[in-house]
Image (cartoon, rainbow, N blue to C red; front, side, top):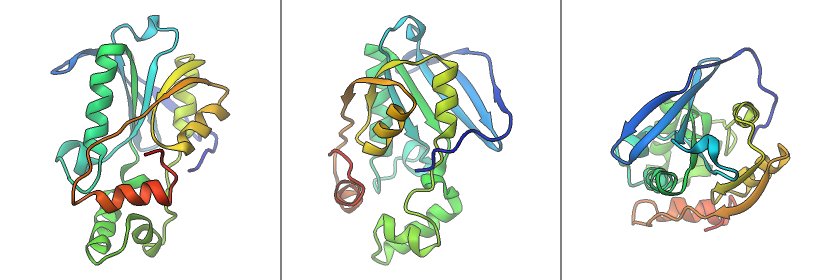
Length: 198
């Protein structure tokens, strides 16, 4: 996890309404270099004292196409349903494949087909096990004046990063998705090697 200061100018959109099958939300975009990150908020978000927050890393294969090789779509769906009911927001962090990009993510998938796990594949391609840069998250938290939240995550690195911003995590809400024969090893690596709270 990289936690550098935001570099270059960050552009921000206005907030706009977004009706969905889950309910009515508002969205805002933060553009950093060539990446455009989305904040997805319940209609009552700005009235909440301790909003529920998920930092969700983009996964085109899972979020859009329903890949069974990961738990991403299930976690995103759980978070959307939860904030629709309880209020809060999702930061849709546009850093595909832990920020190695879609092309390299598919190359990593090909190595996984040959028996590597998700970490081994990234390392073999010359990347760190996690290349994500969370500097935009700091900008979003500052812009939305977040001080006390309930964090929806299993990732201890995200907990540590949010706390490093001076944000008080009132509670952690687990994000537990079903395991299947395709993602069992992937989830096990997240638990055993990356310390995820599963």
